[in-house]
Length: 170
Image 1 (tube, one colour):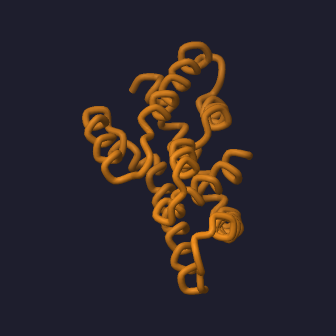
Image 2 (tube, rainbow, N blue to C red):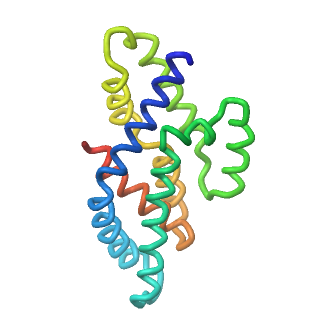
Image 3 (tube, rainbow, N blue to C red):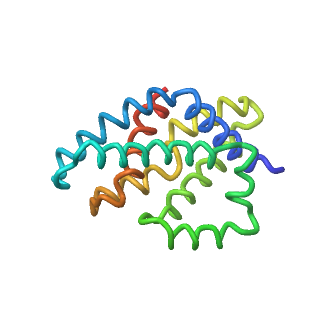
């Protein structure tokens, strides 16, 4: 395994650990952001049942994100041989395009591994990477939602914002 892939895996593992450790804080943040976003965007009347459904979707997306970052499963998500196909499928399934964000992440990983892998520990570089680029694919999700807010995009957006505000600020 080359240094770039090692650091990328350490990045995902650090994100996985942070999401798992801060699930309660994420739940609280999700509830606050969801209430605020629903009030500010004028998405219509939301009774408790409809609100609960959106909150539950957000919480399910947190679990999905934790699994995406899972160091055991990440090799299946971003395997080198199928990465192009995975991105094309993601573009068909998601409302956001994260190719540019992923390319920026890989470039940031490469710049850290080229210059400092020998002198700093892998975990320290992974933590720096999280501070530098955030949690993939949050920026893509946030930008796409803010460009065209919609109820169908809301759970992804709320989770992305929550992760950026809770997990990345550590």
